[in-house]
Image (spheres, rainbow, N blue to C red):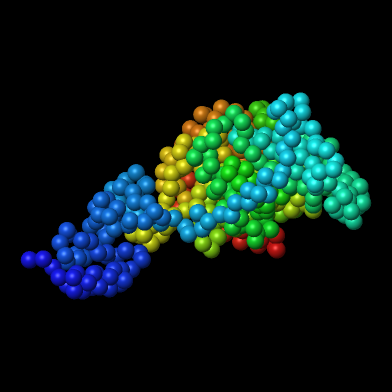
Length: 438
């Protein structure tokens, strides 16, 4: 016989009450067996299809198995609430005249007319994006503009473009950078997602003095503060590559780093880099993994502080609804020679990949060299890393200064092959702060 409307309401009410009692870390949940009565089942006994049915939620992704290559049980990973919250400011972007008359390559780099609010000129490009300098005209800042000539650097900066950088430094307060997608790349959904992710993370990190400030985002473009001084070029001058014989000859009468930093500066810069990564890993609404930690991601402000940027490869970690912990993630094939060993398997990854790469930066700070300075064969470096081989550290660095000894002693802590044995970035910050205070 048909079930009455009152009976249906009573059954729905009972089901709702039972679902309210389900705990977030999923020790049990409610399944319907196709009949009117709900059925209680343990999460570890649930199938992939049953979890798909239970988590009918766009913010939860259900996987057929754990991302470690071994465990076959399904899992459900919930995205952080903030990962889809962003604030595009397209009207502000539409006010910027990039000055591309007929896209003439000879005309593009030229600044615009002086009577405009801002002058725009082409600066440089990476693989995916063009970089433009958008500079307020001086008449907008009359009291500060007259001081610019006194704020030019008095000494060489140690970068490739000394003149261009020296010109940017006094104007940094009235200048921003604009990143736009290069014309040869198609407007694809995954490219948009990467740029949107960068905008979301930079907006969330606005409170950090160690992260570059975002000024706006629209479509495939981002505007941000100008941080004018290259850091990588000062840490690793030139190519940073030599043969073992050349290095032995250079250091036969004592170690000679290739950069000009004092030991105290090296320790200070190491702490600044660690603190900026810790801002990401320690974000209160969910761990953010930079996923591309290398020297070129930091720039130096006119007052000498480091700021971290470039988050279009970043990962916002998701929460495992079954185990009550963060889900591991995959990031595709690993390239270059700056990666953690586990990245070449491309599974079971977490924030510890940043910690490994961070100590590659420490190695460069100490020596002025790249970690595997004697080879430019990425394939050979990959084999070394997968096999557990690390960059050579001359033991004499420990005796050169107290600060360099502390940095050398940090290397094996964050170069541990097993990410679970690796020091966290928070412990690295604590270690470096203690080293500075001693």
